[in-house]
Structures are given as C-alpha cells and as structure tokens.
Length: 229
Image 1 (cartoon, rainbow, N blue to C red):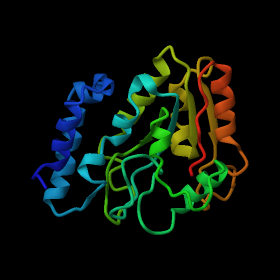
Image 2 (cartoon, rainbow, N blue to C red; image 1 turned 60 degrees about the horizontal axis):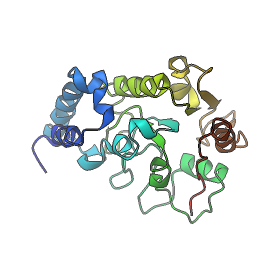
Image 3 (cartoon, helix red, strand yellow; image 1 turned 120 degrees about the horizontal axis):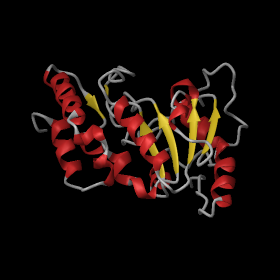
Image 4 (cartoon, rainbow, N blue to C red; image 1 turned 90 degrees about the horizontal axis):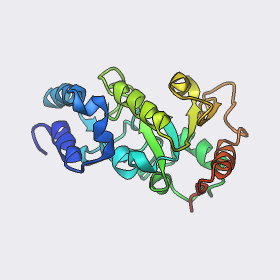
C-alpha cells in the first residue's frame, strides 16, 4: 500500500475526468485536505476502510448526468471486507447487516440475493455516504473529517440539474438535507431509518421503491429494478 493511500485514490479519481470533479469540494482543495487528514490517521496506525480503490466508487459508478435517484447513508461498514464504497452495500461473507435486510425485504429481494448494491448504482442510483471512509471497529469515526461537504454538494448538484430525480431520505441525518432539494422539480420521499433499532418502525411498509418508480415513470424516466436476484 502506498504511504498516502487516500491521496492516491483521490489522484486516481481525478484522472477519470468524472463530472463530479466540478464540485467545489474537488476544485477548491477540500478533498486534498480531507485526504491529508485521513492519511495522517493511517500513518498513526488506523485501519481505514473501504479499500482505497473503493473510496470514490459511488461517484465512479453513478456519474452526475446519469443520476435518477439518490440514497444517502452514514459511513461504510467498519468491518474489513464488508464495504465496497456504496452506501448500504455489503460484500462481506457474514450475515447481511440488519438495516440492509430491512431495505432488501422492502425491495422484494429474496433472502439469498446477497447485499451488493452495484446493480442499483449502475441504473442511476447514487448511493452516497456522509463519510466516504471509516476506521475498522469505529463506526462514525470520520463523520467530522470533512466528507459532509461533498455529500451536501453532490445532493445540490443533482437538485440543480434540469433532469428530474427522486431523493430517498431515510432517517434524521439524511432528511436534514431535504432543504437542499426543490420539491417542485424533484421527488423527496422521506421515511424513518431502516434500522431495526428505529423504534418508530416507520420504514417497513413505506414503499419507497414503488413510490420512486411511480414518480420516475410519471416524469418519462425509466423505472429502476430494485429487486436483487
């Protein structure tokens, strides 16, 4: 591994020429500052996840012009091998995370379908975490490292386009960004967090995927195949 793996991942992402690189986060130095801080944590002995090549995967898989839907998560799974850079997506070998099981059940996916949400991303679903990195065994460790500016700017960039999109905001952290979105131009579908620890249990039965597809179809956009497997 390179001595500055996050900076190297950022450099590699810049070479893709992604439309996301037009965000101030990348143009004005914030990305470099975040990379420097997190590389500092790595130099101090922290195990940072996901693998460097997956840090910007959500932006690579779903370029700005192709975004049809946005789902926001918190941060990657803090167990090595579980996360692949897409919010809620799971590629580990153990039992699916509890929140993801609830999400996939709502989407009508069979239990043995796995938890890799790459098929969603490739259909135009931006699966973006509020922090693109985390430390092993320390959920939320990088939520205050500066990644949130990228999330805010990405949401705003989608909301400012002419193309209609649907924003699925689950839980208080995601719903706090509703103010960045013009509901006259886009669909904002809010519900509680899919975590079983959510005592209100206001995610199951809320039909976010069916509502999203109905809205997209009404806008003349192709629906998304949410069911895995």
